[in-house]
Image 1 (cartoon, one colour):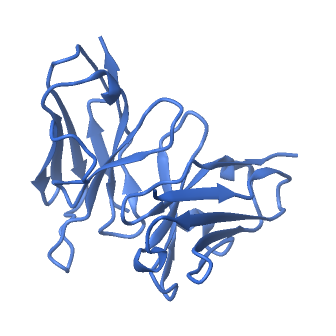
Image 2: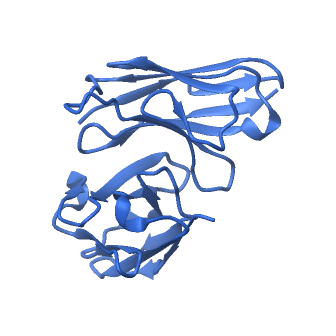
Length: 113
Length: 112
């Protein structure tokens, strides 16, 4: 069974950092590009960042460039999102998704003082 | 950025009725590879998104064949031949051809 399990979310103050993880199982993780997608409360889906199979190519939406870093460890079948200089507008549920179509259950990030 | 415009915003249908959702992009989604990276996903109430269709018209293996996708370039359609109770939720189109990748605003399917 394919599973993507996110962790690392929580409540954090503005300007602080958080690192999300996404543990993959049930498929060959290293064969798929991966993405982070977020959803603010009661809003639609918004793409955040993507990474190629080997990790050599990364892409970000403008609002997170320079603050967020997507990375992966294919030996550990894990995707990461390092989130620095967090802002209140980053408050959302963050999903990891594979380009094979699988989605995790999501992890909530709340940025508030 | 590529703007994805979905219509209608909401649909209220009885079980057994057909459904049609439109997704229009502000520029062609035909990539240099010759592939069109237009996906459809469904988010049921309180759940994470689930995959339905990729590259315009290819159904994932677990998706019932009452779902179909069509279109090209800038205009795409998701159809459900006969709506069932498990189909309620919000449908999103998602383009992966251009960065930043972008989603449509969503179409909420409710049961009448």
